[in-house]
Length: 591
Ligand SMILES: [Ca+2]
Ligand SMILES: [Ca+2]
Ligand SMILES: [Ca+2]
Ligand SMILES: [Ca+2]
Image 1 (cartoon, helix red, strand yellow):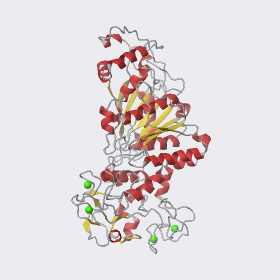
Image 2 (cartoon, protein in one colour):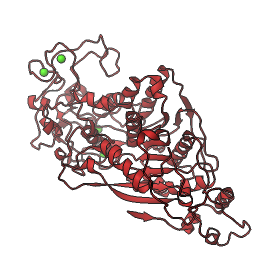
Image 3 (cartoon, rainbow, N blue to C red):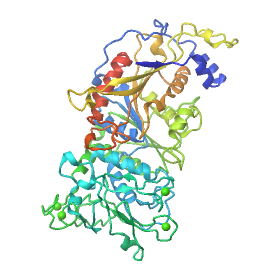
Image 4 (spheres, helix red, strand yellow):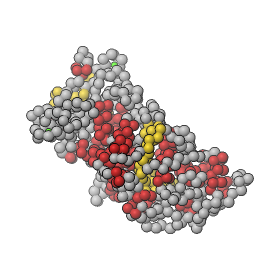
């Protein structure tokens, strides 16, 4: 276990002297005592999860926003409070958008400027862009299975070139197609210059693995265009500007062909379908063919079993209201997640559950919001991370002013305010009297002799047996980062609520290390009660786990970080949470 606690000088160096003085004044007069030597105090047995759900929250950002709402609603006996900051919380919508905006081929000549405009496989917005989308698609399919290309053999699900349609080499929309010689699907150029489009000089060198390319659509979109073979597809530069404006199709066999009369991307009852199997080709005897019913790729059931919106839609209002849910989303979220939260709100409201929708943040460090509503959505003006054309979230987390205007800190402060209101009768202040001569702040260190006025941050590699590939294999470890609040060190008898924070796609737990600055300040100024915050890891698969037990074993994935067992939900619930509460929080979780 490695601990890093920069001294008080470091604290003072990051926050203005005025705020320190306010914090000191606010801190005076605290009660408690008994552990004021600053030690960890004795270890006690942690409560069973069912004993203290009201004092245990799970929250996350982006991929972690999905993870928090999914795990939180799946384990309501353990988590009383959920925070979901801008992620894919409606997997049906995500599938429709993937098919229509991510993998479709359209006769576009420019990349879209916002998530509501048409996008295609070769013309995506600059952010998230093609590289991130391709990597996300891989990880989504590792997590939930490939909902577009069915493979009946579970030991061979990952490479699309081995799927059922690939064996047939015939697609209902694109006709016959050839498989690339390399079994890793077809190669894509990615987007080396990061402009969201596929230029003619971006050579195909990125295995797309879970996708298949097929000729066929080019002639339909641009009849006169001459195709160029690129990564197994015929692409064309119609206007000669060096950008492939149209390309050949991505094979997507998510369902038997159907008449989408209302244009919502899913088959509703009454809409006609062809009973020809998922590949859309009669007489091939593939999945679902000739059985008299409408069939979708069986992996869709896996997606929906891990879909928070589907779960909440099936739950009665009283059960949903046993938890509190905080949400936020950018109105111009580049992934279209604003629509996900709108769909979620209408499901809740359809059950008679009032949801407060607030436009914009009102947060700052001297006036932390205190929302009392149990279901709150904050819609802020801006994109996925608040900036339109680049993902600066990590830079803002590591270097931005925790009390400043950076969107991600505004989001975190508002989340903390909601959490603080969620845990009743909290313990405020440092838990010990601090005697200060406000007229003599010259040497701050002397003022606090023998008293802790800061929490700490524990970075630990936690044994994670759930991720072992076999019972005999070495037990892997997972890195967690845990904030322990100020009073933890000043009162050995005090117990506190705990918040689990799940990072976004491609983020590290260490990206969140500055939550200590924020929480120390808010706790010392008595705006927020003492609480633990444990940041859990989201890395695995290719770049992110989505915090579920994976559908596709990592052994099948050439670029996997592991391989591990892929049981990431089990790792959180059975390994990380118990270890954090028993060992790092020393059992001192409120109940
Ligand atoms: Ca490009
Ligand atoms: Ca062009
Ligand atoms: Ca068929
Ligand atoms: Ca059928």
